[in-house]
Image (cartoon, rainbow, N blue to C red; front, side, top):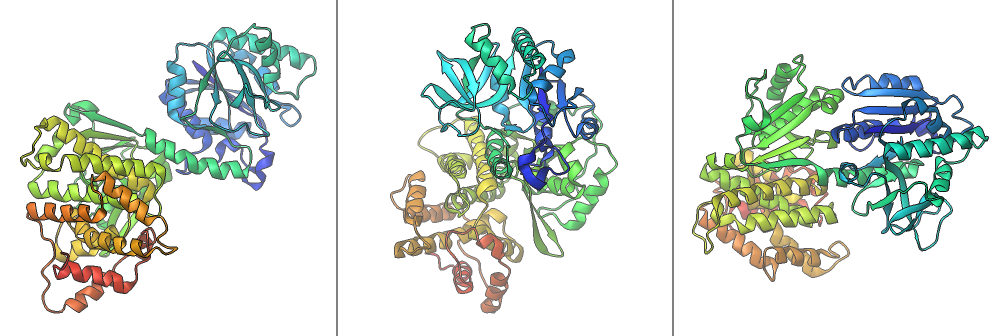
Length: 582
């Protein structure tokens, strides 16, 4: 299977965005260009040979392709790109049109799964439609009968028509038929029509059968103008988050990765809360090695350190180096986020970039067996709090709430079995560890979209001042903040519109009728786990309260469902320090 990509268009409707570059080199949310994305996805699906038809930017695209030495590129120039349509581009590619093809346009953005499904289909000739979308007024529609394509045109609005995107999988005979008819069109001077005009004749003559496949649960969209560009580059991130590769495995990690006997550079000189100096040392160890893969094995700090090393090594390194994350704790979900935390001059710093999302996450559940009792409890609490915060966050979406709910259900269901406590139902240890790993992974997926809220923002200084684990500190913050939210929701103001429903839904995930029941059970769980419900504070509490309050990052607070005044923040800390949370 080869790919034919039309890239001869001018992109005139894009304005200054395409003044000096073709549309295919516009960057998406993660810094990847549209062309990079197409090549990456198609190559990952097994396509190694590409035919690219170019117009004004032919030489630029030729140079661009040199960064993919393992792939084969054929470039075809359309010198009349300004006055012809892509039917001419199709015909000019005659020399290379042998074999089976995916045909697509250079401004098409799609998720990986739709390509995988197309290539896995035994049906030889396929096209894409979406029966759930309204018919677009100015874009292609497809007319279908008995599951087969009958016509493609902009001017179709009947009941048998569907939203349509020009991504085709065609066998060699179909490619040859379409090419010969297109060639006849061009020979007759019909150079400004769509290639689909020639295709329509073949479909109506029943000389060619192309079956339809729905992309209702996938993302396939062209970038025609600046408005499309803004929408597409943001919407595709949801599909990328959903389709990230992760492996739930039972084999030992080294064997799975095939690292035995391979040359590797090892770096482990970082602390649980990585410092800038440690990041610099990691960059020195990494630079000049030529490594194309970085494997981070450990908790959130190890994974965050790898992200920071990649980030500060430059954007090309981030783009070209594959980060494989192997979490050894079930807590931060860092393997599923583009977030990295480190400390510089004692101050917490955060990186938040889509490009830092590890390409692969390996959930090796057996690694959880080596955790101490306190590590298990603290990392569990971190993941659970992330699920709760993600659910009520201002930045929550339907997608993030789905992940948050999955996180909470899996973690809550297995809380006793995970710590070896007696349970009514005997659950196999393998199943418990797998579900705890998945729960933590879902917590990362959730906050990758929604981000965290006040409990996380208020936890960091507690961790540093009182030497308690991060997850423990977050839960100590979450309990009084959750109760405060309940009180605010009862007042029903413009700020709290819908908050009662969110909290009620959250309570339902815990299997409770009211949220307060859930908080009471969380507190009881902390008691049973022999974790402090508050922190002993010596005299001078007011000074400590001021230090804690001033240290809270206001940007993180902006994602909290309601505004928090400094006095409210101080009151939360007061309850934590004075053990007054009952």
